[in-house]
Amino acid sequence: MANAADFISFRQTKPEEVDIFVDFLERAALWMEANNLNQWTPGSFVAPKTRAHIEHTVALGNAYFIVDNNPTRTLSATAANTNNAIATPTLVTPPLSPLPSPLPEQQQPEATIIGTLTLNYSDPFDEMLWKDLVDDWTDAVYLHRLFIEREYRGCGLGPKALMFAEQEGLKRGKHYLRLDCMADNKLLKAYYREKAHFQEFDDYAGERLFGRFERPITSTLPVVEAQVEAKQ
Image 1: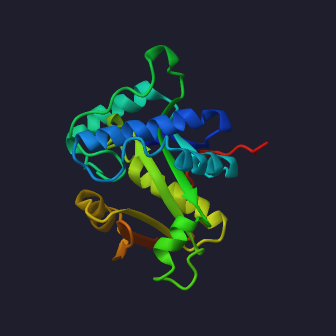
Image 2: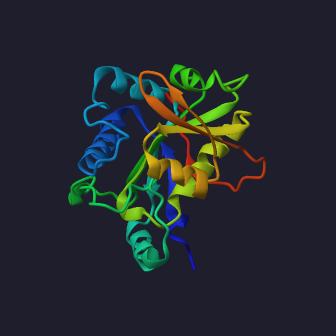
């Protein structure tokens, strides 16, 4: 029997899709604020500096959409497994109030965008957070801006997104997957430690406190489907 995650793939975000990418993040930030989760701030992704950073990440080919290639079948499989699913509060938003629908029904394609993520390899933000801990902070892939529609929680997309990030890092000769979160986000930190098996380091203490997590990349990863397009 096929797993719901079997219908999910990852594809690079195109420059003309930046607005869609930003909208996903803004909706997630609004949901977090409404549910008193301190992680993303509404309005931060449309701010000129952050939007420019997202545009740059897209231009580098390091921003991705998570795509459901068979939405009806995936959601049916997800519903069937809901009672046995373990929610992943960091990767699939916690089980509080639902997010609004991502796109009007008439705009829904056969392959539906259901989430986002970005991968960094040489970003100054990651250097700031990690250079005091490791000798070579560039020997890692850094996962950011991961958001999956809440309707898809419990069907294994969190682990699949982590494996995809590791797979991309391995292609570039990286040995670690690293990520961060707000230091007071207890749900997120518990998931990284207990479910995703990351090593937790001391919080970064700067203008804001960040939790820091790392796990080594194995050289025997399963292949995760990705649609990677050459940038013009």
